Length: 334
Image 1: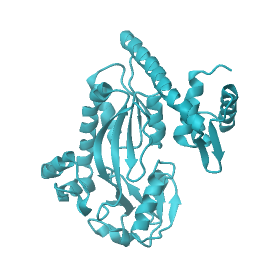
Image 2: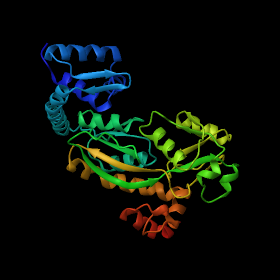
Image 3: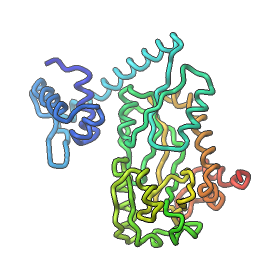
Image 4: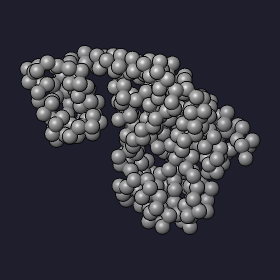
């Protein structure tokens, strides 16, 4: 069997995810099919490239050597394909920017601003709960860029060669609870106020389960955690069954209260990723405008910005200069 770029892409996906199951999901393949491909690749090279364990896969020393040569080839091939297709589409007047994103209320406004700019045929959007999967798709040339969040303490796997632009260095995550929850009467809620509550979190979102677990343990809490998507979590929170983490830009509902957590123990970094700095320059201003528009529209976040100390966020956490500017001018937003 002759090795092809698609085979090298398989090796990179397995190494990046550390799991045949996760790599298969990232590549859009069935796991048995991926396992068969890996065996054929290893037979072709005459050596084992990965060690299989109960917890996943890790490269052998020879596998690491192969990967060091494979990664730049995969990235270069993806760049050739992407740039050629984009140039052809522009020439034909049919270029469409392919954007991937994790959930954010800034997305609709961002897309509207990009469409209003009138370049090409307008962007396409692919949503995914996995930031790591989106970043891998950008690196492979299947997306032009991705807007993702990175949970504090759970670093994303950034493929080599990607350019990054930080929109917000540390966005505080709020708590969503029933409107008649006793803690909802307070302007901010401490984790201790929620000691008797169950938390629901979407464990398929990269880093969120582990991130919340760490924060609860650090607070000395042994709260029950339930798996569930956030639409389910909001429905159950409204009835008082659970509480859940939410973005500060979340839109309020009459049956729910969105409150900052005292000390801002949970934070995420908001990133825009593309293959070149030029691609970031093309779309970042519209993303920034869209994000701060929804920040101004969110009552809890707007109040948080007004209370925040420009010299540092509560709890001694460093506040980026962009936040300091927003906090200093927040009075003008109401």
